[in-house]
Amino acid sequence: MDSRGLHLSFLLLSLSSTLLLCSACPMLCSCMYQGGGNVTGLRLVACKDPAIVMIPTDLPLDTVKLRLQRTSVVRVPKASFSALGQLMYLWLTYNSITTLHPRSFANLSALHELRLDGNLLSMFPWDALRDTPSLRTLVLHNNRLTRVPVQAARFLGNVTYLDLSSNRLNTLPNEMIAALSFYPPFNPAEPQRRVVLGLQDNMWVCDCRLALLLELSRGTVSNLVLLDQYLVCSGPKDLSGVPFQGVELPHCVKPSVLTSTTKIVTPLGSNVIMRCEATGFPTPVLIWIKSAGPDINSTACCGDINTTALKEKLPRRLPSFLQSSPQVGIRWSVISLSGVSYRHAGEYRCRAHNMAGSSEASISLEVVGVIAKKLALKKLNNSSPPYIPPPNRPSVSNSFPRRYTNTSKTGRDQVRSDKTKWNKMRAQQIN
Image (tube, rainbow, N blue to C red; front, side, top):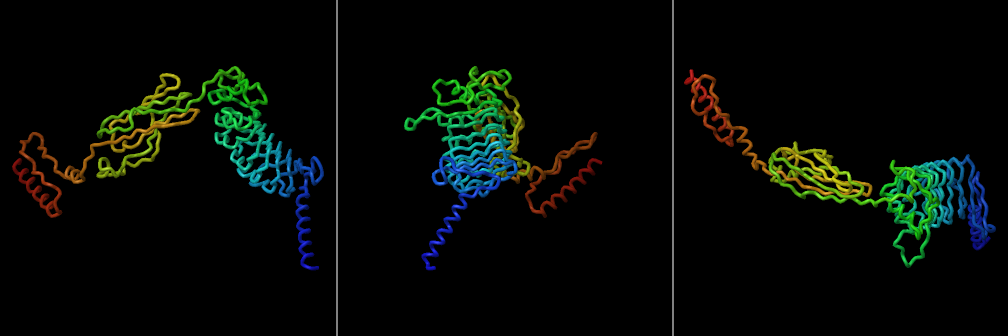
């Protein structure tokens, strides 16, 4: 056989291997073509046996629609379907799935529909959707989801059918609602699409976080279509059982914080009061945090004293001396520092938080009045105390004269000797 014959044989062998991979069907699964034969039809693979405990690894490479239903699969590992570049419909419904890897759907750029109904998911890896830019339908019905994070909004811009019904949700971020393609302002350059949203059978808490959704659900010209129009509040207590259509809610407002000053310079031993005020809706909660200590290299504070006492674990929360809310949407707080020392110096932050977010403002406290020279401290500590005469004895005028202590060791020994002689002479005079 010449070289051309060998080359042709190799091509035929490669082609037959590829066809075998495309046509092979995993054990416990069924494979078929929809809409025609193996040339014009679309490959459908269905795996519905409870004996299946793992995602099959030998799925046909030309699979367009995969149904993995009512199996015992618990987790979906990384890149479980990465070899299926033509996959457009992925149904992983009514299994026992509790965990999805953040890259479970890697290389599924053609995927249009992802269904995960009837599983045990308490958390969904929303960033996994970055691998599915063509996704239009996402169904998470009948799981155990308790929240949808704000960052989910980044991956839902092309989704036109989102079913979150029959979970354990109590709110939705306004950012997620605004990210869906129906939300105004509409782009006049793009055709407007309706978005179908399934929210029924959740434990909705009707507060300001749902204000945008409630407004849109009542709109007459909205491009939002609810699978179930009769949504009901589960909380708070005064709104329990009230339909969405009968609730008027104000929008959440992120807190804004204002302090009485930005910097305080105070003498050692004084009393200091710091005050801050926050506005927002709902009424913010305020806390004080000491975030930084004194600058130990500052000559005005700590350069000439022992800094061990100044060290503390930061940041740390401080108790409020006084806190009040004179009206809805406003709260102010005061902290008081008595007899301030150098350890009180540093940065104090007033932090406000509510459902819409958090913000903070800071006050810098500087303590002044430090003894500038170590030598002065030594003189003060080493000077001799004044003489105190015994009771009922005549007083002897003047104690031994004080001497400067910043002398050599020989000089200090002479001072002690002179002092001893002086005390003996004084004792003889008294006796």
